[in-house]
Length: 186
Length: 90
Image 1 (cartoon, each protein chain N blue to C red):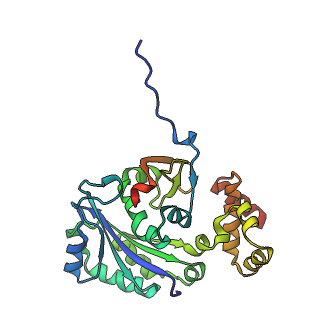
Image 2 (cartoon, each protein chain N blue to C red):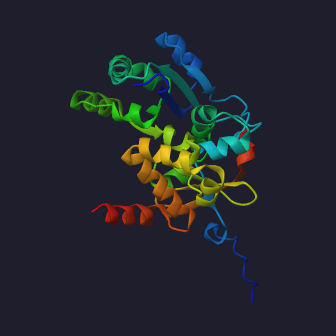
Image 3 (cartoon, rainbow over the protein chains, first blue to last red):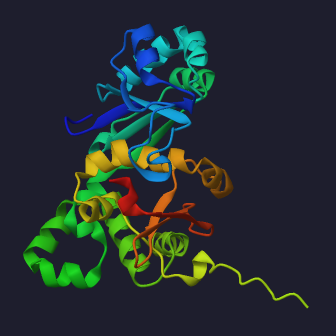
């Protein structure tokens, strides 16, 4: 994947204290929230937070997901002991980065054994100002040349995303927009 | 006869818009990556009971004109109010 792709392993659970797991497993798990500490934001601001969240930043490649899955499988008992209830491989990458990910059957088995899931976020689509989906903003802000340039270099999925966003902004819900795009491309 | 209790407004009656991470992070004045990595996981963990009702692990985030925070399933057929403002998360 590209250098602008990111993968974090999120560890979550009621009563989970990331620092304890980090020490036990000798992994640089960053504590985002520790169970029992006073919340800094949100629902538990100023109150003890019942859950913990830890983030482990890993190199953004499918091989690394595989390697860390092995590490976590070996430490399943520790994960349980430290109240980790949920493991998420959060892949935050642009379209090109996502296209390069291939998940083998072996990796799927490992993830299933960990009861972990992978979530993908395509940030390129949302970070490109042309992809914010408001037709009036697009036409008033961007020159024809810029729009032409975008359309000539955008991938099929980016153009699809743009059209869906435009339809959503004109009152379609996401599902209807996706269905109608599907009809157009048949 | 006892007076009928006034029902709280249904989220569907509010004008709730769903935004991407770029828009929300700009609104909060933070980096998109910070929102994705550090704020959204807390929002999701704060409202586990809503997440279960939505039936999806990674909900869409909606805001009304007062910046109140809503969570919705991907099809936006179920929309739940969190009772908090998006600004409670910075």
